[in-house]
Length: 341
Image (cartoon, rainbow, N blue to C red; front, top):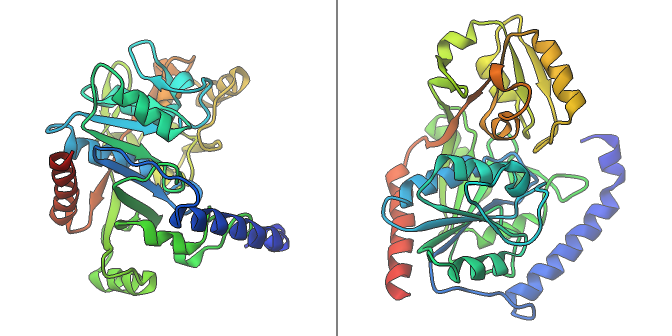
């Protein structure tokens, strides 16, 4: 923890007090939460960014969209539009935000919407011509005005919420006690070889309630990198000279997976919108060679001056064990809620 964060400790205490009062008012019904007559699954975290929400949402889309009409609803972080927007063939990352646009590009059989007001967003989806049967709320763990039927909370293996503190001293958006709202907690970005003993040690450290389930996932990289014209095997591109580019939170694992001795790594802030001078500088550094970026960055960059030399590496969330149990819990909740509605 750096010195500035230590100095800001009194503000963290104040922030924690304010968020604690807010949660108390919602818990006791003094502030209104709205429920809906269809399955609503919220995926989020206690900390700021970098826990793997996007691949987890995509996992749920793959699990559910073959059986149900699925819609995702996100805030649309850093989008340059306002209010409710439902993705269509004219949409782009500027209008939707990079993560929702990524969902829309990859999954043509679902609806993708953005609205900072999740209650209004759900109402708009339900009033449309194609009514969803399930809504996945992206990054909505702290959005208490909507009461989801099922909560999935993510925490990174290398930055567990139980070892963190409230902003601005730490990275938590609210007190660690907020985990009590979660039906499932997932420790994400684990080493694929994480032992059962290590998992049990983390389970003991988190000390979840008996009614909460704990799972462990890791990031699985695609075997291929993609451009708008061709593909290259990931193992082949690792040995090539290239420029690696990332505008995501915690890009270290992405760089480590692909980096060759002579490669240069360029890092930008999460959800960064690249301006023309930055694009020119990146192109100059690449010197006509291959540029490999993340899928989330690619949706913002694919129409730029880098497009002819730009590739991206998809990722997905995979379970160390217990995927069948996780799937069963989700499908049981959805099936039960759908029957009740």
